[in-house]
Image (cartoon, rainbow over all chains, first blue to last red; front, side, top):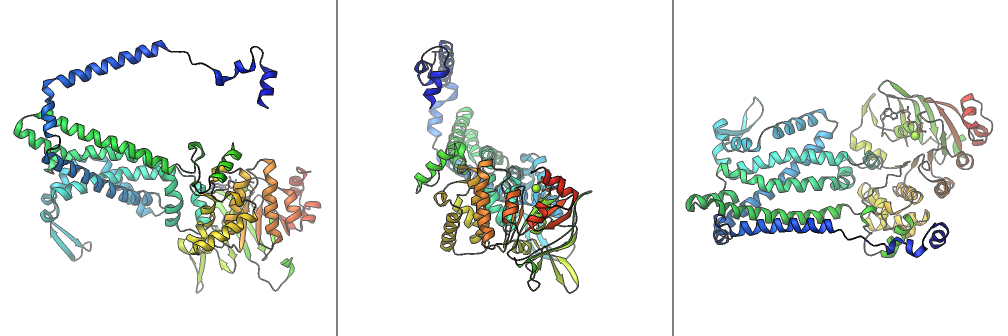
Length: 313
Length: 260
Ligand SMILES: Nc1ncnc2c1ncn2[C@@H]1O[C@H](COP(=O)(O)OP(=O)(O)OP(=O)(O)O)[C@@H](O)[C@H]1O
Ligand SMILES: [Mg+2]
């Protein structure tokens, strides 16, 4: 039916000549020259850096897998994972509390976010680390009433717990806002439908709203994760032996400052690159059922979905 | 049908229902009884409060005055001695769980396949056995003529097909009452018929239905009773032939004149 139309309509030229499937793309010499020029600059810069003795590449190679560096790398990764998991879990609770109709819950959540987003992470870490000077004893008690249990602050707050508490609580404040944004992005009719079918609020969140919110939660969370890996370097100020702290401990001895920093920089870049790839996979998973991605149904019924795809165009 | 039988209790009993959004009064005293097995079609101009009334029946909106009973239970409240107390959110969820609802915008869950959409409430809310729920879902899909779409996602279906899935989903909870809010208003004209046919079948099988629609022909053929709403009041109701063929109230006359 399309051939019929084209022969009728085309004012000049044969239908097959007019067919865009046979179109040529003109060669762009200006683009080629630009590519070559930029390539030359980048290659030249790489050459200069690689041959600059001040970077101390042999030292970088020598220390890249050094046990101290590896230990620091594990600490950084471990801190990132723990702080991120705690941050996301607490962030979810805060986001749901903030959106609930319960005034007490939403007010408390708003204050939490206000405080932890409003103060520098570095300062929060130092406060956690120096908790014992503010509160020498931590105790659980009834407000203005008897004490039920108590601990020496110094025995509870180690560099490790201070680092986890500082990073996780700060992260929770940011994740709360990211998750809240995601939940708000889901059509109101979805939650209403779940409710109309007798689902409890918790179930409707878990089964209907959160899975749809994930599409807008995942990309900024990937951002947060990458920020977190780098933010763990702040814990070096409270004597936590992370990646940055361990390269510092080496260059304090050997005075090879730049080469040792290069070791840390390359490790940070490697990890974030791996995370970028992982994020891509997660995003694809949560966009299933979205026609724009051309994502088909489960493999067991290819014929039915192919038919449905056709019918819908 | 059973509407004149004095021994049966109404399934839905709405008394003096008032509803206001801030200062805007939307429902101004609605009284309506719906008998088991009865099909009631609500007509009325835009903004007269039809959707709002429907949403009050399953407590998606709380009412300001009056009372609504469904199946002998007061929706949203409970008598404790002679004091009326609000129910908890979970108790209200339980009351809703046998009221099916079909929305103008379908509101299927886009991240679930057709089958998952249908079995979500039976399995998750009513604790039905998964295999039995799937079997029932397949039976319902056959009934609405969509057996080949079991594993499709909603976005891969046409509007009419989506709405029929939404009807199957509402039937899957074995509802004692079905609420339809303009189920065909978002559909292209050539797709309206397939949805109305499905609804006509349900009406013939004795399901209790309250249908808000602008499809006069559906009201004439399938309704046991037509209710005409205007400005938050029920101004006229009766048999379809009487209300549609010989309207008494001037507002009903004016409204129906547009469909002639
Ligand atoms: N959530 C709300 N907040 C404030 N006003 C509302 C809200 N929902 C509905 N209204 C108002 O209540 C009135 C009745 O609305 P309703 O949706 O019940 O009308 P309707 O009879 O269903 O109309 P239509 O045929 O256009 O669907 C309208 O004036 C509307 O603007
Ligand atoms: Mg409406």
